[in-house]
Length: 443
Image (cartoon, rainbow, N blue to C red):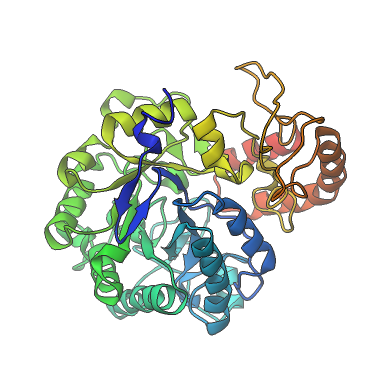
């Protein structure tokens, strides 16, 4: 289908902004902030590249709402003036490029590392309940009611910092993938017996309170949320997620019908992994969310290709979030519109420090001559661009030929492999997932 007829490439209004297409940059954790959780020049360059197509919606990587909400090193924050200033520079540049940008609000809960919380302020390791959280061996302490109220205010303050001080167009409340608010939603992790556990009504209480606080702080059209009803990432996925998430979405529709959007993760996605086949997939669908939410805005994330994104946008009217494709293709919007070959993201550099695998992926040439790549053989990081092709003036210094890129990567990868292995071993993954990741790196 051509770009002129597909819904994926048509304008749409989200919240208070009008987008020129329905291709969304998904939130992508990269762990390249400073030790003080501040975004710097390298991060600025990364977002500047991906804001290059006017009218694009960017959802930032997950960002801690407070020090107490953390537990990972080198993820960004939004609670100090220095952190706000770092983000403001990124926001200003995205706006100058004609794009819009939302900040994703993050609290880890039991997914955070106890030792990091202790090191970065002596904060307690807490969660929804006292069940051991995969892959750790020590259970968290259940949050007190006072702490729940404190975190609700953290969400409000972080929202104001993002919108009023840093200039973001809106904020997305992270309720997915086994992090704090998802821990309260799901019975896998919530074994409380008070007003925040047990029944569906009780388990949705804190997530709704957090969203209410955000809406009160910045307005309903600048607020959004993300959920993952079917994801098994970090040991989640209750036996039947539909009643709980139906109740959540129904309440949001009743109390905040003008919410900017709901962002859903499709069943085939588990964290960084896309499952080729979902057991029982015929019974797993987010259509129940669409049925409740009606004709309001939904962003769908799920390992989409160009073809499947076009199909999904045409069928549902959803905006389509792309993750790994945006990592490797700073000009993804153009490549999808013109059906140009895509660079492939290098998983080994997702979380490593420095520019390799971060800001060195090339833009497509202005008048491209591409190599022929068989459909079953994706283009490499830079080999989708013919070595004899002239690159556009704006991005000529960023685009590299295949041989230059390969030589640089061989040298860089040798120095970062040890770092990658160390990060994987410390990551909050199951033993099986760690083994799979380590095997992929060694390969």
